[in-house]
Amino acid sequence: MATDSREIERIVTGVATSDGAGVKLTRVLTQDLQRRLDPFLMLDAFRSDDPDDYIAGFPSHPHRGFETVTYMLAGRMRHRDNAGNEGLLGPGAVQWMTAGRGIVHSEMPEQEQGLMEGFQLWLNLPGRNKMTDPAYRDIPAEQIPEYALAPGVTVRAIAGDVPGLAGAVRRPDTEPVFLDIHLAPDAACDLPVPATHNAFIYVYRGELSVGAGAGIVSASQMALLQSGTAATRLMMHASQAGARTILVAGRPLNEPIAQYGPFVMNTRDELMQAVHDFQSGRFG
Image 1 (spheres, helix red, strand yellow):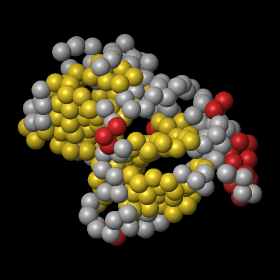
Image 2 (tube, rainbow, N blue to C red; image 1 turned 90 degrees about the vertical axis):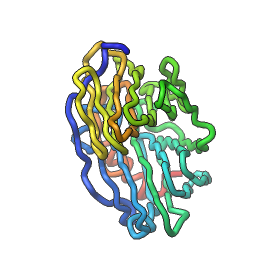
Image 3 (tube, helix red, strand yellow; image 1 turned 120 degrees about the vertical axis):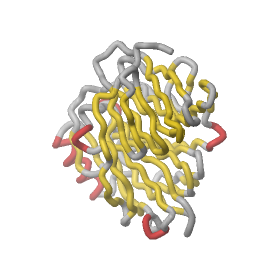
Image 4 (tube, rainbow, N blue to C red; image 1 turned 180 degrees about the vertical axis):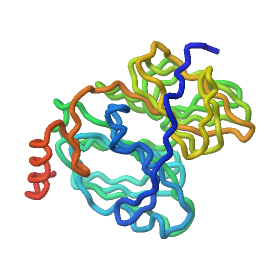
């Protein structure tokens, strides 16, 4: 294995909260980490087999200035928006939505019982593209490339263009990498991670060690990986229980971030304009 591995900078435990019409979730990447993990703005993890935790869903709400990436592990969620897009997200599927200059959408469960589990990631857009036309793409589970990276290691490549792991989605500017990595008990892997990118992992099953320092990351924890390093790899080793984790990395935009709820712009004036435009019915 390579020895130039990214190491853990610090461990973060998510905050239990609710969003939408009362959906219970864990907010892992919070607003205070936006500058450190630029270009990522938010990461929510949700997992429950209690319908009361998710059945009310996310009724119609607006976004402007960034992209949302929803990755379903279990359950079914229906997307509708005011641009006429509609799609059903099932297990293993991804929804990639560019809010751009403004979109209003809903995300509602299409199940009344059973497990609902997945992630929603917010990815910033550069200032010059924040007012681009909205866009939407559903990616079925079977269209996400899957790789046997090493014995006992499977990688689902949602996004990115790194050696040996071409993802289903490629985006300019931020060049995001989004991998879902499954490690069997005691399995190890060595993944490419661009030195130019801010990066983190979130372990959602089991436990694993990271880097030459063998820092331990347990389920429901996020590990920020050191930045400002020449390291271009990430070494991970699962415990005897195995592990599942997502790896997220992106090229920072290094631009001002101004956020008001579902609007993310570069200045306060742009935020006020976003609120005015939405209230005036100018989103779509």
